[in-house]
View (cartoon, rainbow, N blue to C red):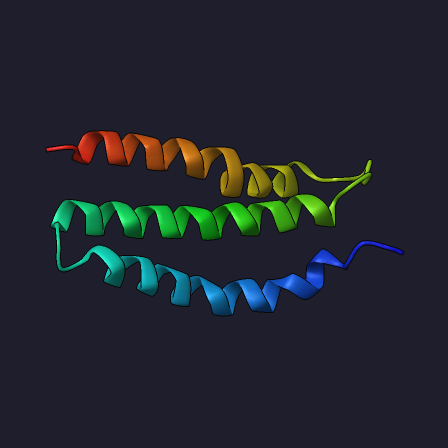
Length: 93
């Protein structure tokens, strides 16, 4: 059985992104503003990771992959993780 086409996941990711971010923010909002900020950052990062992975899957075994496509993929994966780590570390009271 062939794996699912990652292109079919894009609409679901876009739709779920806002819902996941909202739920994470609401789950900690009443307790601590710092946790609310971190939860929002983590939710946005998870969404970007998924989007970056879908972009990666679109170009699996593609020897003609452009530099632009590669950079878009790692921006959603590696760069988003590093940026979030830096922001959370800088926000610690």
